[in-house]
Each structure stands twice: as structure tokens, then as C-alpha cells.
Length: 402
Image (cartoon, rainbow, N blue to C red):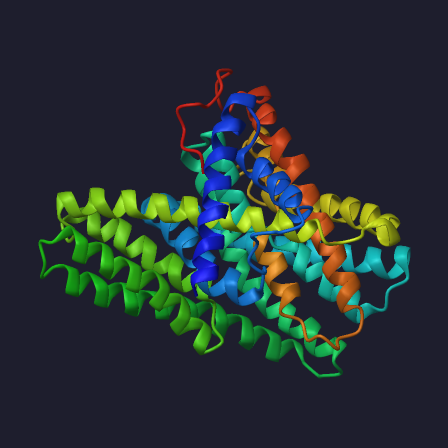
């Protein structure tokens, strides 16, 4: 336990130094963390914690989702819910199909692992998206669209991932079973979040102590996630629901004024810590992979992922071109290029059984795509936002780091 605490302390020190350097060099903070993690991995003694599915899912993901949801406006989310649900379902299916078909016909993979990789890389990652957009200072409807889609497509990805994993292991499934599993995962996760969030709000109304209020929100964030995952439902959607309830209903007076300020500060710090650890550990894990043997596959997959994202965004947005959900073309460009991959994809592949065929190749290719997404798309995101006039020309130095 002491060794783990020491490693976390070292990594937080590195994250703080990287934050200062990234601001001075005007580089994305997340890119700096990944590069720093890769450099740490080259040291003879590496103070690195192993990046595992459990670490990402049960420890680092809940605070990031809760902190983002806490600041989400339910009114704004409800206004664009039809659009975001379309992107999170139909968009993911289109992208998955294109990546799987490309891997089958261009690379020669069998359908089962090709489908598995397609599912893993089709869903955008809430961790990477939220960190990048907060750093760039994106606000308003565009921020809500991108962040909400990245969280909502988790339900689609988890169900399709289970189907693909069953196929590669020789299991059977039907269209009806897939539909039932999807609805159960999504609706069940939302209900878990609503129950836990409701209970938290009922309890927090009986205290005026801001420290107790922070404790209740911490229990709610992790409790909703763990409860949903225990029943094989969407923990991400559960924590999202809890965060939206606390952030919107708590603002009406359930939380005290001092409590809301304290809760906001606490979760901003928690998000900073979780983000820092995730991206440092991704970089450290990248330093241990040899991509030379699969570089041609990596190039093909990256091209397929980019094309799949384009086919997921532009046609889906075109469906709403003459409706109140219309998305301006410059915002569609950001939805396309801002669909980053990251910790969610890694958590899924790291949870694959060790004896699964193609497992090691899928893991290496996924890490390569995540690295490209974080570094290349991360570096170019802010210049693209400025070029399109979405943020002003001055550097977003007043925005938060993560």
C-alpha cells in the first residue's frame, strides 16, 4: 500500500510539472502527459502503476464522468437528446461496420476479431474528449454535444463489445438478444444513477456541513457506477445520471451555497488527478509496446477510424439538417475531429481474456490508435477551433488545465 502511495505521489509531481511546461510551450496538457509517461517508461526504475481495466473503470473513470455531468445543463442536454442518441447509436454502428469491413477485406482478419476491434475503436472516449475540450475552453452547445455523445455511446459500445467477444469465443447471439441487452444496459444504468442520486439528494438535505456534502457526492459518484457494473449495466450512464441530478437539482437549494462551492472545487481537483494518472499511465504503457511489427496494420486502422468517424458524424447530422437539431457545418467538423479515443478503448481491450485469439495484436493496435488520437488530434484541436472561429485567437490560458 505504501509503495502505491509513493508512486501516485511521484506521478502527481510529474503531472504538476508537465502542466506548467505545457502552458509555457502552448502544448495540450494531455499530450504532455502521454509523452512524459512514455519517457518515464524508459527509466531504469519506473514509478508506474500498472494500467488495468479495473484501475480505469472503477477508480479513475467515475470522478471524471461525475465532474463533467455535474456541470451539464439538463435543459441543454434534453434539447439535443435526439441528436446525441442518434450519434451514439447509429453513428457507432456505422463506424463499427466500416472498420470491421476494412480489417476483413484490406488486412485479412476474420470477421470476429475485426468486429471486436471495430467496436473498441468506434466509441469516442469521454476521458479524452472532456479533457481536450475543457483545456481548449470550448463552451455551450458544442461542448455539450461532444461530451454527451462520448458518454452516451458507452452503452452501445459495451453491448456490441459483448457480442463481438462472444463471437470470437464461439458464442451465439441474435438481433433480438442484442436489442434487449442494449436497452437493459442503458435503461438499467440510468435507473441505478437515478436511485443513487435521489437518495444522495435526500440525505444531503439534512446537513449544513460542506464536508459531509462532499462525502455524499463521493459515495454517489462511485456508488452509482459500482452498483450498475455489479448488475452488468452501464456504470458510465449511471454516474452521468447521478452527476446531472446532483448538479441540476442540487443547484436549486439542496446543496448549501458553501457546499456547492466546496463540491465544485473538490471534483475539479479529483478530475485533475484522474486525468493526470490516466494519460501518464497510457504514455508509460506505450513505451513498452513494439509497434514496428504491425505498423502497416496500424496505418490502415487509423485511416479506417478517421473515415468511420466521418461517416458517423456527417450523415447522421444531415438527417437533422432541416430540423431544430441542425448542427452547423463548422461544428460538424469539430464533432468529427474531436471524436478522440482513449481510456475507454484501452479498458475494454485490457479486459479481454489472456487466451483470446488476436488479443495481443488487438491491444497493440488499440494503443497505437489511442496514441495517434491523443497526440495528433489533441495537438491540432485547438488550432482547428480557432481556424473555425469557435474560440478566439488568444490562447486559452484562462481556462482550466483539464
